[in-house]
Image (cartoon, rainbow, N blue to C red; front, side):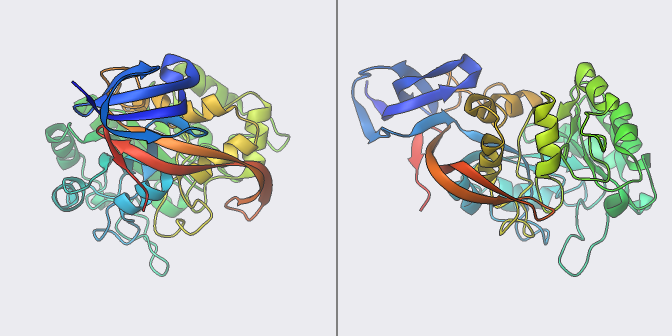
Length: 377
């Protein structure tokens, strides 16, 4: 029986299998069927010589409740250009508007959308150019009872609980919203993803509350609330949190990633566990742009290609406890991303306006969704 699709001649790079070689990869019935040489016939064959085939990229931090919140972008258009096959929305919706997100955006979407459900009733509802309301400032909007019920009833799509703390998101509420989110997570057995911005609370206070398997996003943010000291040393609380199993996610976004922080962290041997774009309406035209641009920044900062890819594939899948994603192992979900690695001189910018002139750039040349070619046109 012929395969549905074979990609031929590409460099297959799959950190989940420690695989990095020129090979063909075949798909059948929505799954990866085989990796090897001269695999036989297929209904469709694409020559990807000179390109890199990786597991379908996972962007662990996005905002894709398009039309439902002012910060939401169109997931399909973003994924076409960014090589993402799984967009994880982080708190755009809360228990009060989850069903609209599910019915009108997630279910019709050609690309996979998973979500962290916000503990605040309406999620991140007031994030715009002219109106900026921190949803965690008003503790009356915290809705732990309904959040637990909605998350428990939608485990097919919801992978954890989201909360935002910091001066912009929660005002002077400190760690109270995080405490509420952790209670929900304990009740239903899910991880938390915690956003952090300016203090209060401090970086150290948030890390002290997180549990193994919880995610701290915006982990490489600039001062204040950076993970490094003024002398460029990784804070003791950060090292302790990694030993305890806290997951450090990038979440680039509009204000949460600085080259200065990243250089210091990498110089100390502290790589992020997961790399994500935090793409939304206010940063899709810069400074974040998309997932492949975010990955390229780490490549140009000296992080090896295989570990950059792992941070957007297998590591992200494990953070969500979705081992069927982020891998090209035979029998896994048939998602793949085809990347081009170009050499040259490329300009990158972070959230504080610093520019980095890098010599490499990853771009998406197309994706495979459920074993079928889906080109970014």
